[in-house]
Image (cartoon, rainbow, N blue to C red; front, side, top):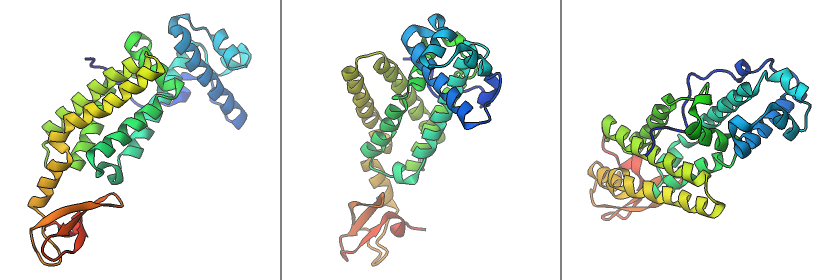
Length: 268
């Protein structure tokens, strides 16, 4: 098991710091994006050491002189890819950190998380940055292992939101195991055939669900909720789960027969 993470950075530097000049017009911005897309493909195919700025320019269908207008060397190009990857990772986190996802049944919540990560790694930039970080960490200028803690803190936050009575220490430990195990399998998946890669992604989902169920699974949360739930209509404590609506768990009172969402039955 590795102690590296795909989600780590040294301080959130701007991409312009790795560039000779920043494009002002849309045409220049599009050219830079083409260069970065091409670089990700070249680095993925031949590795960082064998890649050249001429090969990247050729793949981007641009003159090498145009490439040098923006990037002084391939190290600057790779650094821009690092920053691009981190920006995309943080955008992914922002989309996942929502009650509508966190409050889903555990299997569905994990499916959302794993699907988002799988989609991230459909992009050549994230694939090459992730693999190179494990195989050639010395080339990195922006990403380092500090993002491992950021990833763990993010996952711990999701678990705490899902199960507020979890201690910070327990949430952090659960998150640490989830991040490290997932990263290990992701690395293998990215270096495998498409079929085997898909199988491993599914195993990540099954692994996380099995591991987290005793701690933040549906039955655990149901037990915790039922301890502090009463029917808002008749104050009965005899309740049963009755499906979800708009991402919220609903309950059925066994005495009066009325339904209500979890928050309406919570004791003050």
